[in-house]
Length: 100
Image (cartoon, rainbow, N blue to C red; front, side):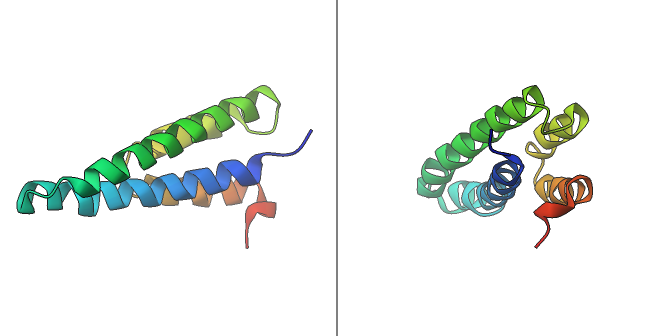
């Protein structure tokens, strides 16, 4: 049974980048410049990454590879811009093998 902590780490990181791009660039451009294309592209990307992260986290908890509290943190951090970077820090603290 492969360890999916690295997958969870990368999904959390990529979801955080997608959320930052969506909230920090695409949404302001949509409303200030009346150009919704960024939201149409980044919205589904963020949604897919978020759902993938949640599925991987639930799977990780069920398999005993991820602590439930850390999975909850990942969920809430994925909803807040810049939250992914705090989750990244906490994941690396809990699982040092994820560090670069």
